[in-house]
Amino acid sequence: MVQYDEKIYFYLLIIIPVIVVLFLLLLVWKKRTQKKFADSELLKRLTPNRSYNKGGLKLVVFILALALMIIGLVNPKIGTKLETVKREGVDIVFAVDVSKSMLAEDIAPNRLEKAKRLVSEIINQLASDRIGIIAYAGQAYPQLPITTDYGAAKMFLQGMNTDMLTSQGTAIDQAIELATTYYDDAEQTNRVLFIISDGEDHSEGSTLDAVEDAVDEGIIIYTIGVGKEKGAPIPIKRNGILESLKKDSQGETVITRLNESVLVDIANEGDGQYIDGSNTDAAVEFIKDELLKMDKKEFEAKQFAEYKDQFQWFIGGALLLLFLDIFILDRKTSWLKKLNLFNEKRNE
Image (cartoon, rainbow, N blue to C red; front, side, top):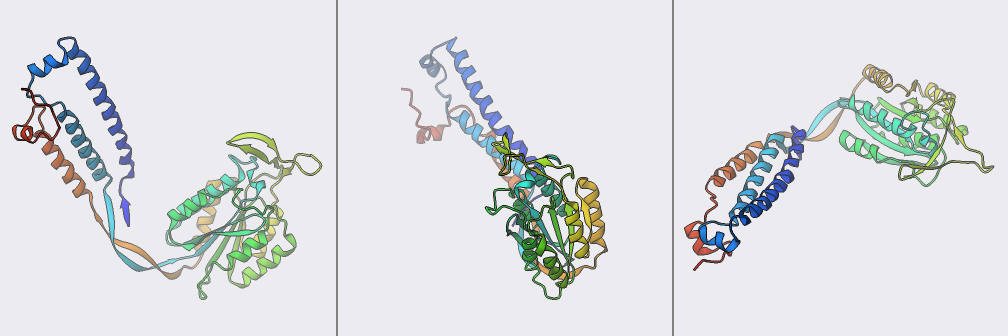
């Protein structure tokens, strides 16, 4: 397992192609300038000991040294030991609505992107809690099982979109039922489910039954509403360009609205609370406070420990190459000349 202390220094690698371009421009300029004084054959006779290949070799050595120096500044660390550690936290599952209504742009940039940002910001506030992710529309799909890998969670989160599930609609009951299978610790009492949605529910008759079953399993359900009550049309885009608006069977433009009442009922029945997701900072702060109030359950997690710095190897290699660069001269080396490594023609 590798970690990087200062990833920002990777941007310095952009210098390398710039140096190569400048070197090539310098070669072109030199060639043009030399032609003004003499042709190539005469120049070879005037400077018989000059090597025309060592300039490129010096460039390669310098670039390698620069690359190693930059990697040294990043300071890669290697985990040398996998340990089982004790952690305390809450098991949290995020159920994210990915139905087409989440494309409505009544909340910038659209409801789905707002939901993903909310989840991402909540994850940023967590310390040792375990998290899982569910995507749902007409059916529920397990996106990420319970884990302590927040980086993986964010990666899966960013990949969520309204085309990932072929079955359209909004079946909140299926999301809740699937969430109950995520909590694998029979003794775990601190179980939290966050449902992030615009509140459109095509399974209202069975949703509260699913909530009741979840509460019996010790799950606390919070709902987060994204969208506006006044509603908005659902844009149909291709490559980011608006093509049309979604229409119903009568040809009328579909207006999707935030249904807070459904989300409030679910939260009340689930022993949780409804949260307005329009203000990200306020919503995240409220959730942070709610999680802090909960008792933490101890659990085991495997993680790499004893990370050791590796920067010294890269810095050392860079200094060695720079030292060698001093001895690479533009003239031909006598013993290398005999070996003719660069396949240079000998002047008789």
